[in-house]
Length: 272
Picture (spheres, rainbow, N blue to C red):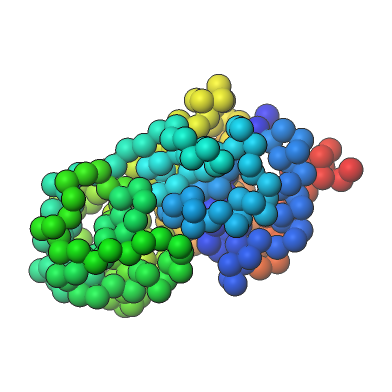
């Protein structure tokens, strides 16, 4: 039985104008009130998506969010950390060297703020993210010696296409590299993705992946789509995600695709 529903945000739960449609919000609130665990899964920190958490009324003691693409599992209201993992500055050195050699931008995120690497090409990440996070431009050599959640290259789509072609096998061994948006490429610790955070949260509630339904559209959703008992691709998603999914929405993110899928999946709750 499905007990947890995990949702990607951009182009999945959110419309293109970054809203949760009224019908989708209503369906998720009803499922939450019926005891289903609703979990937002994002590459952003929790404060950057707080308005969505409030809109869906995910403010109970047992409400959690998967942030930084799986690297941080956090309780919504207390901000208590259930699980956290990351990379060291030393882990990021090969990526910095690659970016410097190829003239690429780089932003490094800890679990609270963003460090645009000031001695590299300027990044588009702050404009793309549009989130209430502190951006602290810093030369790589001056980065604090601490754990980091991920690194990001944000630039024109054509430039990132070229980056993808230049990535070496060693880079792929060292990082889990995903294209979360056409203009954003993310570099996570090897083996890290949203499924890692979800597994830790499922264990916390004595559940398994068989109890999980997930919705996603892009490469950074593949792990949770493949692992879930019911992994659902958005009809507007990539071919790779659709191929990995158990099912697919009939409608896209701008036309209540999730709400309509949930109504078929949970008629006993949503047809009341």
